[in-house]
Picture (tube, rainbow, N blue to C red):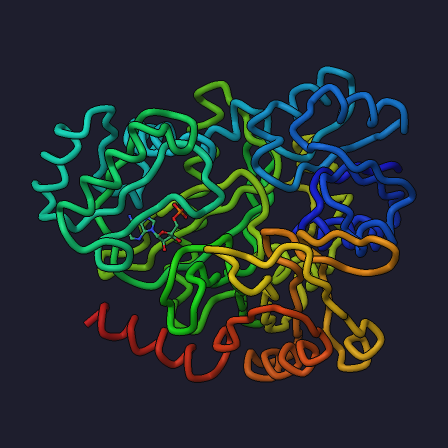
Length: 440
Ligand code: AMP
């Protein structure tokens, strides 16, 4: 079977590895020259991933049987729809189903319309004064969000990114005037307090199969300071549930995802592919922060390496609607993933800096390496504006996985930055204590 993976980040490198391990022939369509993907692909094409007709042309010319779309931007551009129209199976949602991610207002409306648990108080506005009335009603304790895609970097939260009503007004004005995220509109949500976690699930239009829960770290700097990023790293526990949550929390999140999929089906937007829920575990239970229409990046790197079932078989079951007949399993292992990013990432990244990676030494230490937004030129690896590579440690306990990850990171050299606190015992203890205080 010939499988095409669209995208050239570390998430896609992990997807590509799972495709190859499943015994399929891998083809890649990506905008950057990812050395890890190039090495394992039967063939690849370097081009803008949102160029729908070029993706279709390439897929047809290589007689692709099934495609998997990694990032959200090509989904929004309708790459999945176009591939399906040319007779290729697609294990990712259509543009219409992916609106659950690409339009935050639509997501909140669906949750309200179908009374799905985990909803938050929120409203969307195209007028600054009206938006400010709502912000004041909420005493300024809000999250301000562009409606469309911003790569996880457009959200500003009271206390974290702004403190005064004046700052809130300025940002609301900026989002509406500049059309940040593609629309001259802004979504205002109540600020949620608690611990965040991710639950990803395979979905075939009606059945979902949830994977182990993961905690990502969006903020750039240690101790959750600095601006939001695409994600600096993540961890998971061998039990499938994170140390600060219990099985009821996990079930609540899975039920929410199931209900969203049912709602989308009733709206005529059948959802096939991986669905991703970003949740806040609060004193009042599990609340939805956002829904994504794909694997998370970094969260894909926590779950795919421990997947025991043939990944391509799962993708086929998602396409064909028979996930309920599959037996899916994950190894009972803990994982820690840390991203290596160019120095200055998030504000003024050093682009084109050389990174030296001793892959043999990393293998010897027992870690997994996934290349992200780098370019390989004449066997040298150079940074871009985005994250460079992800390192994953896998072991029985989180602490040991973290140590493996750190040992491997010593074999990466360059003008880079890493959030070393991710997955450490100290940070995890803080998460547990934080949650205990909230639940009091
Ligand atoms: P998003 O792009 O919607 O995932 O938002 C990025 C980050 O902003 C999330 O991972 C949260 O840390 C934070 N955030 C988003 N919405 C809220 C909210 N309603 N309350 C508190 N924090 C939020």
